[in-house]
Amino acid sequence: MAASKEKEEMKEELKEEMKEELKEEIMEDEEPKKRELAVPGDVIASGTNFLPGEGTERKGDDIISNRFGLVQREGRFVKIIPLSGVYIPRIGNVVIGEVVDIMFNGWQLDIDSPYMSFLPITECRGFINKRDDLSSYFDFGDMIVAKIIAIKPRGIDLTMRDRGLRKLQGGIIIHINANKVPRIIGKKGSMINIIKEKTGCNIIVGQNGIIWVSGESVNHELLAKEAINLIVNMSFVEGLTEKVEEFLKEHGKDLKITRKFISEEEMEEPGEESGGYREGFDGESRGFRGRPGGFRERGGFRERGGYRGRFREER
Image (cartoon, rainbow, N blue to C red; front, side):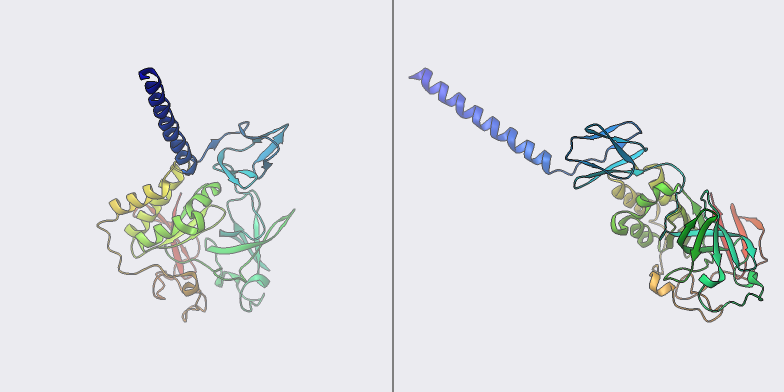
């Protein structure tokens, strides 16, 4: 009888242990999966249930990565979010470019791409007379937000006839790898909105990896720049949002924000002085009438005088 009773007790203990193990397995399954880092040649999925997406290819039953980046699964599709490589332009991309040449019918822009881009006068808002001096509209060195509307063998065609597209004034320009742009923006704009809120800066992220930051002061802009660089350098790290929030809280504790960043809709309203778009905060333009083209050194930045504006370029 004693042996039988002991046997029953052992069964009950074994059942309890199995229940606890099962609970732990369920909890592990419910936890969010960590992001995987893949290099070309890595097997990131196996079986016919998965379909290859961007940055992947199928070899037999396996899906192989052909780029360096983060693995992302969306239903049956498996793709790679690249973390390196040159900017590959696509129709519909909003980019930031620098005016590098003025032609009789438009402007040539450098958008950090293997292809040169062209903004015709017919794709600008308002009427522009071909006989006018086009440098009075956009001069050498001016930075412009535009959208890609066509990709041709001779180059890329741009437009400014859309919401939020304009010439930039003031602020700093930051160049990053275009493949890091999704991490800078974050899911549904979560990451970039944190930086805007904590620094009070207006920020435009071009999909070509060129970013414009304009704040109340240089210190506000530098804090935003440092946060962006943190994301670029730690783009493959888990819990990046929390790390960025901690960084901004620690380094921005002595920074006073008296004005909130303004929305894209507010920034689009026409300014009275230039007939263009309102820049800076509360409709104030922080630019000045400078000499076209050329650079000046000031405070560790490269300042470029342009038509009614300037920016400090960071590389």
